[in-house]
Amino acid sequence: VESRQARNRRAVLAAVRFGRPVTRLDIATATGLSAATVSGLVTDLITDGVLVELAERVPAAGSAGGRPATALAVNPTLGTLIGIHLAHAGVRILLAGVDGTVRADHTYETDVDHQPTDTLEYVAATALDLVADLDIPHRELLGVGVAVSAPVLLHTQTMISPPMLSDWGEVDISARLTKRMGLPVHVGNDANLGALAEWRLGAATGADNLIYVMLSEGVGAGLILHGRLYEGDAGAAGELGHVTVAQDGQICRCGNRGCLETVVGERALASTLAHSHGLTCRFADLIALAGQGDPGVRRLIGDAGRAVGTALASVCTVLNPKLIVVGGTLAQTGEPLLAGIRDTLTRSVSPVTNRTPEIRPGALGTRAEALGAVIIAGDAAGLRRPAAGS
Ligand SMILES: [Zn+2]
Image 1 (tube, rainbow, N blue to C red):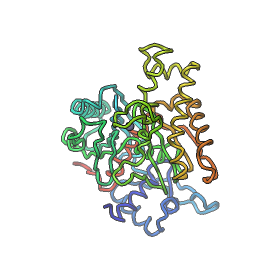
Image 2: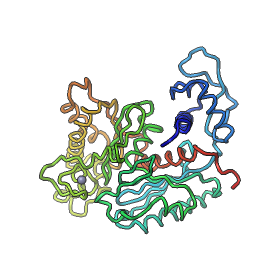
Image 3: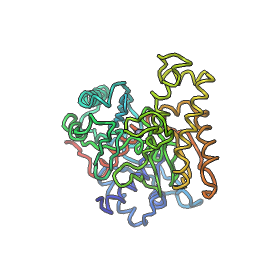
Image 4: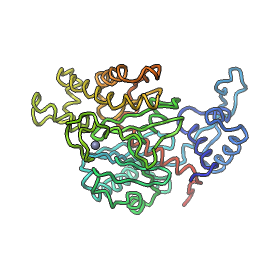
């Protein structure tokens, strides 16, 4: 279990890493820590080379007329992080700074679910190629984060291999990538990491209670409650894709029937267009047709939104979030999807919660999950002195 010192240090880093330069007072306000605690942690982080004091002085937020104070920022030369998203049918690899600034972004379609060995070799080799392309020395690499479509408890790094990822059952992702890349590797659930990224860097900064919904080939949700990622007992909280929405629907890869993922997953949606648009219609075609205002596709996407809303409604009644952030590949279709979700929530969330949560598209697009992987890699790296000169 993480010590209080480590937790406070991580909270301070989170307040500094993402966004504009901040003062010590801003950090105390954002974290709820005392001025003395913040001051001590900041001194340690400066000594460790993680934070730097800027020449500019900034007015402290929230204290109009207050004396300008020294601004702090993450050391821009601290190093580079690698974020990897292993989705069901493709991978994404990002190289990014500790503040989440993306330096390289690579995607590749492949059968991740059934090719664990080839997939891990591909992402490791490609990430190291990207590093070489940018002339980044290996000693400047701080770590690797990996987003997977399986439940993971972040603080214990325990992954449950779900029934639909049976080929990954015996695979130790962290050990294999550490060996291949010579770097520390941290694994997290993809929808949870998408939530973390939208909360730290994207559409949900400043919200303490929110649900991030990832609508791609995999469908899932990440919950930020009381300003913390809520993972559930075994890391399986937020498995929205496996909520039953059609009693006599298709059999799901999880073994249940009529799960949300069998209705709004990429392949499920594309196959629904076989009768009207032909058997070869793929998800990429669906996205293009949506952009052209195709009426059948608009109807399909609105219905998908309503199915998502049906699965979300009781979750919203139970948890009373302030905000729903919609991400994943389907979110590219925009308003018809959001309108479908909004309609159903307005109708179905209990009036007891007083108002329907606001529904917003993600700000990070389909990069959110890989950026969340960058964030956990950075969180872990920021907790120790960087290996300068090694
Ligand atoms: Zn299922």
